[in-house]
Length: 125
Image (tube, rainbow, N blue to C red):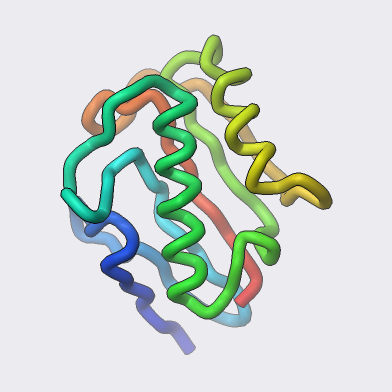
């Protein structure tokens, strides 16, 4: 069983993909960047501001799927510059104050629309 998840509280897909897919007891949320779902435009600011918007987007999408960030099991963090690790991590840590999920953080050559951060998520349904 596979269910496509969509919410207006998260940014609309900018390509041929779904915001999230619920399958076999998991929710797979596509990589999120710092788009404001209300305006459809990128937010202003560096890695910390972008991470805040991304975490809000992830929260909205996983909640639309009937779950929560507390049920996250793995996140992938993609940074344009590893020098932004501390700024990203400080914001990220507020969303997972205890028992954080598994995570990978890597530096990448480039992200869509030249964002500083992109994050994807897998959670229990």
